[in-house]
Length: 622
Ligand SMILES: NC(=O)c1ccc[n+]([C@@H]2O[C@H](COP(=O)([O-])OP(=O)(O)OC[C@H]3O[C@@H](n4cnc5c(N)ncnc54)[C@H](O)[C@@H]3O)[C@@H](O)[C@H]2O)c1
Ligand SMILES: O=C(O)[C@H](O)COP(=O)(O)O
Image 1 (cartoon, rainbow, N blue to C red):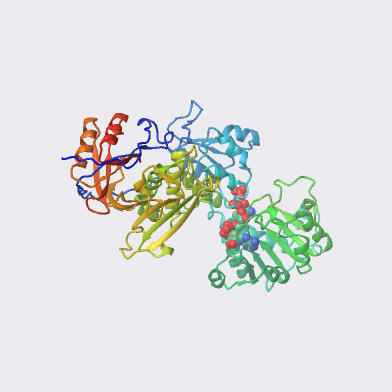
Image 2: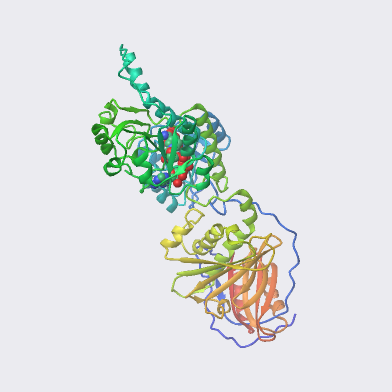
């Protein structure tokens, strides 16, 4: 192939060692000078189906911390993840866990012991009795990848800390719903008929028929506070008892209420008209002490309260006052602000209060179900799948994941390439990701793709370990603003994405040709034949498969350039996998994108830089 060279347009910049890792050499090889050549068409490739492993998305090698730390217990098999089970879990779940992990069941661990143990664990399974605080995540030193909550309420897990540490939290949200609803109904009926008190009295040798006259339920109004899974099941059952059911839930769909013929009402209306109030909302900063002196004051005198949700939603001192004053006639409590409550707790001594030790989920059926549900979720997460019950990460159905798999790779590679094109010391603050798609925006969830662009941008230039869980928060911590834009294109909606463009604003580029006319670094890619391709660099259209590594050269558009560079690479035993040339104007300037299987050494790169028609070039690791 003929070579021709032209005047260098840019000053050569320094090389860095080709063997240095991307993480340590965020500055990719860059040189200025050069050329041209004729383009070589990309041969079509068979469609390659990707099954997306969350090794790409959620975790790194699943049993390793970012630093590659392995299990410390020499008796355990290194290849299996270590799963700490800190509270009693049903046998079926344990069996399932044992089939793929080393299981350590350690109950009643002190906070200190949990912090000591956690360093050697890949996953932790808890119920409501284990506080998974920030200290636990800190003590895990990055190894803990999943916390599985064998139940619904995740108020005992510091979700903020979990997210920051990139630890996925999954729960088992459905298996104990019926058990909790049945327990609420059991407490409601037992309270109305003084079953617990009468039982205790008889066992104490008494026969007091008049003292334990109860109240009827039929025709009474019960307010279900929190119309989610448990609340709806309670409503259904209360209807069966002939009660008038109203519900309050700011987020509940009207359809669900309509289907059960339940009136959704305001908070005030619910508490002021109900004879019975049954609590079924989560404990959150908003619901903490929601039932307090003020709210009790608004209730009907003689109201009866059931709490199978969380102790913290009731101000217990205020409840005591309301019980003493007669405002609240009775309370039935399964949950307490502190569990177990202190022995001297006055609530436990009230004749008009019945209590159970957090038994809502405690049926054989529910516990087996919860154990299996959480074991499967933890197993899936450790094996790299996105969980359908993820609490601190987008829940992405498997079908969507499979469809997005090649685009996820594309997104990460584009992020990784774009950041390597940044030069100067300004730091990256503003990034825009533009998705071209024929899909309706409602049918196109970009969170996974955005997380992967973020991962691609941040990981090469920091020690942060990015996954879908912490991508947004780490970006924020680093002052990186990632905007997204969806552009409708009239292509086939069978494919979720037509192209992804990554733009980096307000930075200099090591490769001036990557800067668009608008002044920001711009690269664009598409998935072709199931494989991510780079299709645009700055204003230049290229077409190169994003596999291996990449050399981008800007040269004078003239014959022979491909051969010249190809020969240099060949002389250094570097195999060219793909090549594409793009230009804006014929015989003016062109960009050559060369995919290489091996990393060229410093000498090879220097020789490329010395080709007189090459104006600038950059070596990029994918
Ligand atoms: N005692 C037990 O053993 C036991 C067993 C299962 C569940 N629970 C608890 O019951 C609660 C409900 O569980 P679930 O499975 O139905 O959860 P869920 O998420 O299906 O339902 C909770 C509902 O509460 C609503 N909500 C949130 N904030 C609210 C507010 N301020 N006012 C009114 N409603 C609000 C939500 O919109 C949601 O519909 C949770 O706190 C859970 O931990 C306890
Ligand atoms: O939120 C829940 O699922 C229930 O409160 C059950 O908690 P437990 O697993 O501690 O019984």
